[in-house]
Length: 210
Image (cartoon, rainbow, N blue to C red):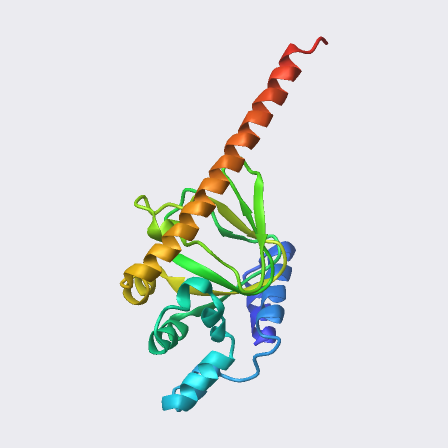
């Protein structure tokens, strides 16, 4: 596969920067995947299939606080719906003020969250989640940007599946909304403080003698 990708990139005459990034993505994304998992999984059913799915990383949903109150069968349904997505260090995972169409769980890696003014809010690591604010707020827009600090392997839960399997449980939904509200208020407070600092610096520069 790597040889085919490289031949394709050469044929299309991609610049070296993009070529190296694509090859790096394949190297990281497939370094442990020597088998066609989807084909094998289609031949397995019942409890064995559930055991395999949960063992391959999707068991992390069981460790997320707001999901612990869901029935086991529902957790399995959510686990099946999760999709693995890869991001290289420096990649923008989501942008502020764009439509929020999914929730992310961090399987491996570190993600930095930035408020609108560009101030870093926090770092999130293995087992953390983000993107939930846009799924529970009425405007459905991202209120922060997320950037991969390291190479990241994330599990993505689309809005449609979130609303089908999670949001229909009022108590769980309220727990998520509380987390989202707290994060949003903290981010907004930090953003306002950062803007004030920037304005004060600009004012001092303008007022200072040449």
